[in-house]
Image (cartoon, rainbow, N blue to C red):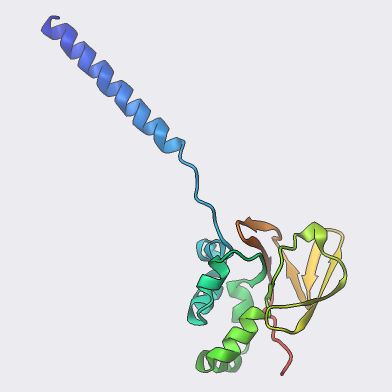
Amino acid sequence: MTSAQLMHFSRRAALATAVLVALSGCATVSAPVTVADTVAKTPSLSTLNGLIASAGLTATLQSAGPFTLFAPTNDAFKAVPAKTMEDLAKHPEKLKDVLTYHVIAAKVMAKEVKNSNVKTVNGANVAVSKAGEFVTIENAVANPADIDATNGVVHIIDAVLIPPAK
């Protein structure tokens, strides 16, 4: 082989290698995502993500489940009175009660919602209903609903639910 042929062959080999590397990067499969991971990767749920971590619930929401999480947005938490948020910050057991009031120990997709009361992980019941395409839980509307996770589903809601006093 002449040096010109060798150089041409080397360039072709380098080009082929580069193409294979680029294509293999495109072929990667995303890892399965749990309810906790879904919350963590959603920017509009960053407040909820921090509170879940503070309450020690991340590992629970990464476990087998199944879970339905009605996830309040950052804006929903901004609407909660500052005094209430300060109280939750001072009392981890109250924070855990509020957060688990947003969780059902079953995977409930929007199409499966029936107008009824459902027991939450907190132990209290919540009213869920469906009108057309809209799912509500208590006074909150789910939008979007049905963010599928490996261990359940997340419905993003526009209000923070406060459980009844025990």
